[in-house]
Image: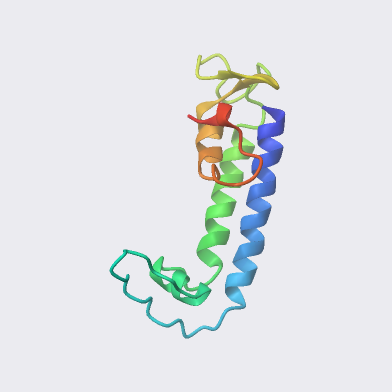
Length: 122
């Protein structure tokens, strides 16, 4: 689980950097285009952010900070002293102590990123 937690922290660092990039975009975000007949929509970064409701990096940073708090709360899981230890929630992974379901759920949000392992699927 140690690798999983390190990997998750790197993903959160990447998202935090993305928040900075969002803040650098033009503040007058255009409306997103309507999908074509094939259901495909091509849009700029600004249009995408408008479509998903991100007006600044603040929401991204808030989400990153919340995920970091969850990860910190579960930092000791699998050691016998962790938040989930003794509750029978953990699942064995190849690289050490059991992973708690909350950490696996956090990782699932990044399942399309390089380094994600199939064994982490909840």
